Image (cartoon, rainbow, N blue to C red):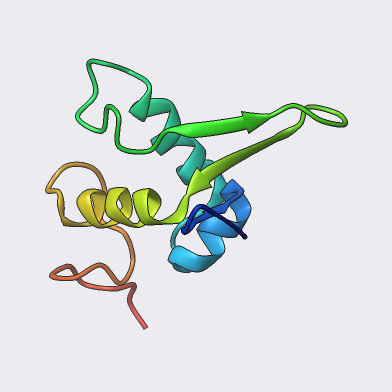
Length: 93
């Protein structure tokens, strides 16, 4: 995680680790992809910032934006329930 101008940024893996065990790096990347689609309800909510470098470079996401998208998707009624989400049962013991 890095701080730039008072905002915390992280890679998809770092963001996923901070948001909880049911969030994966692939989920963070999917939110960013959806954020770029003007027809998606998440449009503009999780921009990605790509920095060229060795190999393919690094893509950074703002932690506060990712947390907002996570909360929005967790509280939405669409899609499959995520384990441990508020108001929805967890996995059977």
